[in-house]
Image 1 (cartoon, rainbow, N blue to C red):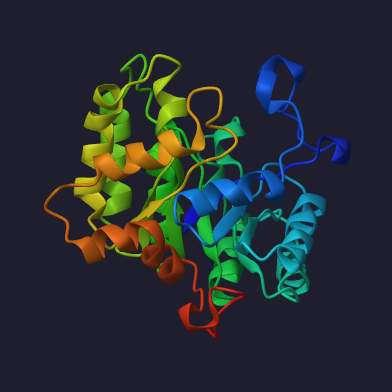
Image 2 (image 1 turned 90 degrees about the vertical axis):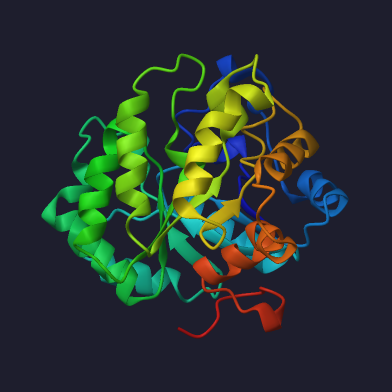
Length: 286
């Protein structure tokens, strides 16, 4: 299973970051295009992740899940500081496909936003409802994320894109490495092996990516690593098959075949509370 991909429709109008300057990304992407790529790599399901900080996009993704057989569920967005965040979550959870939430922390000016008391209250509400938090951060935000998660010990969390280290420049390696260690020390936090080619840049190679990937894999281990393609964001740097093959080559040779398979499906099913027996269609009981 691909635990991290995106669908978007430009006419919806709430993707503030998505501009014509992004070239091949500035068009619609949907299930009809991704489905054959999933099948080619032996993936039967995927998780779609929000790309706009709006409830309207979350509802759009949940509606797609109702109609698209390859979708196991969606990671959406809510305003965690909203006074009635519990009501909003309960309304969204009328859909069996809401698996988690993702505040777009990387885009916020306040690196410590996730530690605000109202945000912690929202995180507790998500945890009480069995949702998973996707942690989309850059290295300077990782320590704050770790501190916030300590305040909500039962919350399952997944670090997106191994924390987005600056692989191309190699800058701030210590900040990223320290943040990675702090997040990995929390047993209810996992890590997505995703976004690697984007962070490495257009001239990426397995050798460029490997040092950062190996550190993440060592810290989180075989039970807490999830493959995600980050399609179509990956496309300026690599095609879908290249991303999947890179992830396969990065997994340690010491991992068993069962552990390698879990990185491509079983771990995602567990971390997002998906029912394996039901073919990952909708949420399992929590």
